[in-house]
Length: 144
Image (cartoon, rainbow, N blue to C red; front, side, top):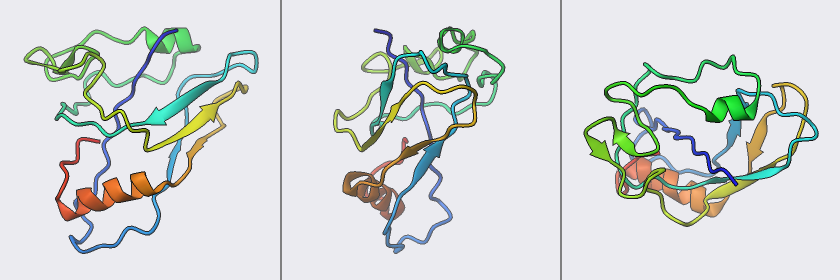
C-alpha cells in the first residue's frame, strides 16, 4: 500500500491568452520496468494547488530496474521538491506528498507488462480541458 506521486508541469506560456482548448492529451512512458505479474494500479491526475520547485539536480536516472528501486528516491538538494517539501529545505507542503485537489482530472490503469515501451494514455476529460483553459487564460495558477 505504498503511495507515490510525480509532479508534472505543463508549459502553456507560448499559447495566446484567448486560445480555445478543444482537446487535452497526456501520454506517459514509465521510466521503470513493470513485469506482467506486478499488480495493476490506477494512476490519477490531480491539480496541484501550491507552488513547488522545478530543478534538474535530482531527476530520476531512468536506470533503475524495479518499481521498488524507483520508489527509493534520491537524496534531496537545495531547491528540490520532496514528499515533505515543496521547496527543500525552506517550504513544506501543507499536506505531505503535495497539495492537490481531491478531484481526479483523468486516470489510467497500469497493468503489468514487460519492458519500458508501453505508454500510458490518459483519456481526455472536461475537467482536464477546463483546467488547461484556466491556465491559459491566467484565471488559475499553473502549478501542474
